[in-house]
Image (cartoon, rainbow, N blue to C red; front, side):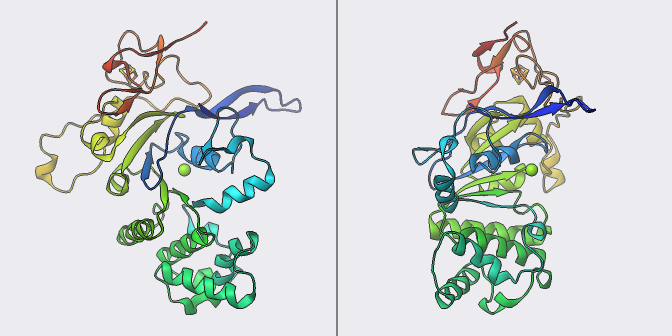
Length: 325
Ligand code: SF4
Ligand code: MG
């Protein structure tokens, strides 16, 4: 039931609250230890806000987040600091997430200082060297500045920094989106290799379903602030149950004209509605090619539609809350 609503205020001096952007609007989702859960959806669907809210980098306005049995939403500052040692974020833009005036070795050491790990200059620089080596960089580069590195190297530095305090859970928010295609595969392979070696759990946030399906054990699909489908990567990519997932998949480029033949493209009509004016009932109904009678009346629940594959869609049986009022 996780919710992140941002108030919208009127213009002018009074700035009265006039509504809310329902960026995350009642999300139900489990991430299982050791897995990679891909979280996909178009830009603006709330997936980054969701990733941030899990670590309380933005404050949830409703619902709960539970990490390893602890209620994250109720944590005080001290327990939140402890959480942020175990649960970290790798950001989209390695250019923006590194301070251009700070040598990369110091950037990687910063989490060690914050959490009081490997105290003492020599222990700390030994750990930094180990971390740089872990992400495939020469430990000798610690004294250099971010602008001296390529985009892919900078993302490796971002990953070394994220892993410095030995986290368990990593949110990768569009971690490869700003990299050249040739470099994307290298960084994906690195992330996968690190997961195996360090036993990490990933939430892999991306607008790119093609990238996500290759790295994920399971995939969750988000639309307009809500998770609308969850299943194994094979289920979601080969047998999607939600019309929105089908449309997303039909937009994924295929490698050959032969593969293109016989493929049905689903072009969605209209724009994504504003998150300040979410449709009643099924929030996808204004663009859904399959919408039928119950869709405006009943908000479809994210329910098991067979083999553990969850979908919030009445085509598989009407389950959900009737619209009130
Ligand atoms: Fe389409 Fe109705 Fe299913 Fe929503 S519930 S995705 S409108 S068929
Ligand atoms: Mg985003």
